[in-house]
Amino acid sequence: MSILGAIKRFAAVGAVVLAAVSLQPTTASAAPQPVVGGTRAVQGEFPFMVRLSMGCGGSLYSPTVVLTAAHCVSGSGNNTSITATAGVVDLQSSSAIKVKSTKVLRAPGYNGSGKDWALIKLAAPINQPTLKIATNTTYNTGTFTVAGWGAAIEDGAQQRYMLKASVPFISDATCRAAGGAYSDLIAGEEICAGYAEGGTDTCQGDSGGPMFRKDNAGEYIQVGIVSWGIGCAQAGNPGVYTEVSTFASAIASAAATL
Ligand code: ARG
Image (tube, rainbow, N blue to C red; front, side, top):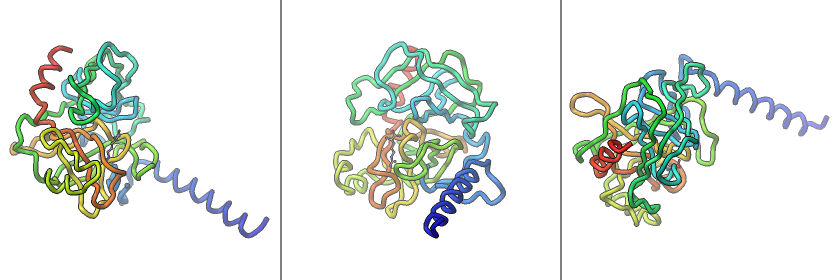
């Protein structure tokens, strides 16, 4: 065997070993895992998190309704094709709660920009704590938590274990100033978050999942829904989230019809 062949073979074995290690549950020195730039969520830490089978995230709005992104669904109506997985950080856990959808309600008037929210009605209740949503702009500031099973690096694979990260609020003016698609930010419907230098962000497959923080009572409150960004975790290209407070009453009335 040539030396190059031996090196390639070693590299391939090394990659397999590393991949296997990265699939193991969190150990003592949980190394930062690239959501991008994140770390493993602890079992039970965010019990309202839901993984949806079309490859999106979501949050439990009520035991039978999941809040996600409009761009994760194809329209409104009866729909039994989606499976919601909840109650676990490990999607392959034998204790995962799996429930099918019965209906989807996509935000009225959704046309691909803004209004990026949708509700999924479940065939049976998921007996886990729900995540309350912001009903005014009080908490649309500060540092937020994001979590999901999406790519851990741009163009990377979906994750087996839920990752989490913290991202600071970015003002509409600063977000717009990023240029390109960000110039078209719909300020009343979208809220940006991330670091100017990049490195930490949600990414493909995190869409529909919640961006949340603690309120003055110390309880989690959802302020955003993962919506879009240019690439993931790039310097100068923030994450854009649906501004939940803007749609809180529309979400509540929609949920009441399901
Ligand atoms: N649209 C993506 C999805 O469907 C989410 C992208 C979030 N991107 C970001 N850079 N924050 O999963």
